[in-house]
Amino acid sequence: MRATRIVQKILANYEGETPGVKANLARMLMEGKLGGTGTMIILPVDQGFEHGPARSFAPNPAGYDPHYHYQLAIDAGLNAYAAPLGMLEAGADTFAGQIPTILKCNSANSLMSDTAGKNQAITANVDDALRIGCSAIGFTIYPGSDAALEMYEEISAMRQEAAAKGVATVIWSYPRGEAITKEGENAIDVAAYAAQIAALLGAHVIKIKLSTDHLMLAEAKKVYEAQKIDIATQTARVRHCMQASLGGRRIVVFSGGARKGEDSVYDDARAIRDGGGNGSIIGRNSFQRSREDALAMLGKLVDIYKGRA
Image 1 (tube, rainbow, N blue to C red):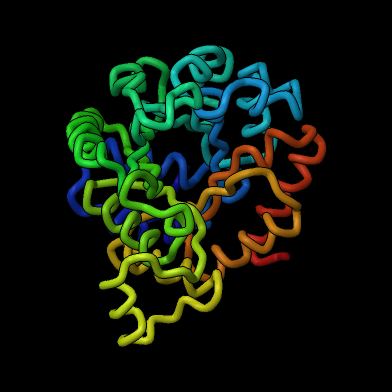
Image 2: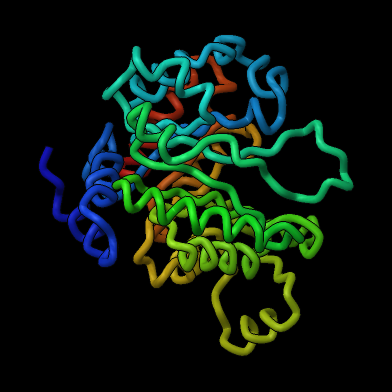
């Protein structure tokens, strides 16, 4: 495998990283149908932990089997597959070397009370990632939560260990918690701030949600209006989030969220592409569809990122 110039340029942005981390980033960037293009589609399947099995897999019961997701990612030609420890361990031997994997190292669950606060438990570690051959660890932070500072310290330490052992770090940066309104969770000023926090924590790949044109933070709103920052379209908001990710020097993928119509999924991908984003991390919108429909949809997303649709 020889890295394309596009991939080499992306890797050059990670000036402080070890060869092992860069090799694993290259492995993901060069994998699958989008390999070498600088864009990525990742399949994340941590929803069983987050939302429960029936809510996650009953719409397509084949998804109860961890092997289904490995095979879907491989057959769709995706760049990587992300999941908690148990899901990856259940297929790590059968699918060894066939698809780069990302070990999700912390998780929340829907059985917690509303008074518990927004936090996640650490459920796996860097040595687990090495043992089952992962290219990266994944970790969620909740900017805006009262537990956010603890989460930042946790991923800071884990990221340091991962980099020393040649493993890349993907940070899910999802604003929510006591300081964030429901509308503010997807506000553009908050989304850009979340991307910046993940970048400054050392994320090699940043995962954020697509945002709305809402501005939640009063002091930030003054700046957006005074500087006339363009947030009118989804494409413009993606572009702004890339600016917040160290001027576009970090890989940023955007989550698909809850299942929705195919046209909405395609419109999102075009906005990500045109705004300079690095692709999609799309779970429920793929594995909750039938295998046939999921492969067709993911195939069209590949075409969109290649500029063919």
